[in-house]
Image (cartoon, rainbow, N blue to C red):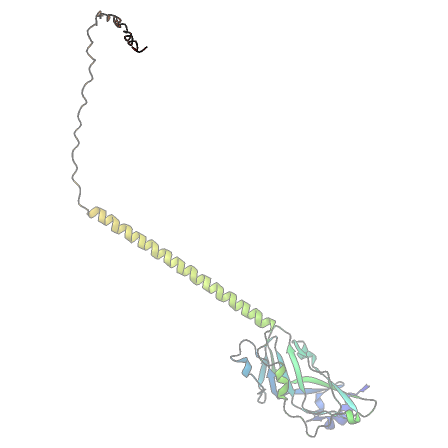
Length: 283
């Protein structure tokens, strides 16, 4: 496999690239420009990600590729690869250094004819802006050891529009790391704002409660001051009676008390024996 040199590209350029500009030759590569059709995957800022589809740039119009998003970009030139050749594609170094990475195939088949579609990814933390007509892409041509023959592409007409079927693989919202970080910061900011609002509300309630307490205290004091005075009954202090010494009792003389006489024993009458029973006369 031999890569074509700059002079070879200049000599055969009109059959390879349309429109061909000799000043677009860069060493052994040819520089291709950004065309009109493109697609950028929607991020969380899109109102309805499912409705985002192909878009078209006007001449010299710019497009943004947010960080962490994919894009399909079509070239402005129509490329035709001979059936005995193979082409390799890439992105210019100046665009790569911004963070735009080529994630599409790196070769173009023999016999291809049409505008090239590049799949790119913004790996940088910042949005990359491109303008229609900017020199962004590179293509190299090389010889095969023979003609591809029946294995070569045989299009009947050049490809001039982007194939919408490739959008089905990346349709819908794509959550990038930058987008997730942005959402996290927004959530943190919203939470902080809510905490500040709650603190302010609590502070206002404390002030209101203090004012209400002072008002109630004032009403209570006013009520106490306005209440009629209760007449006070003078207290008469009486002097306790004097404690006098007890009168001494007269001395007590012992008195003789006669002791009671002992009881005399009572006489018990003797028991009389019963009279003898009469003898049985028959006896």
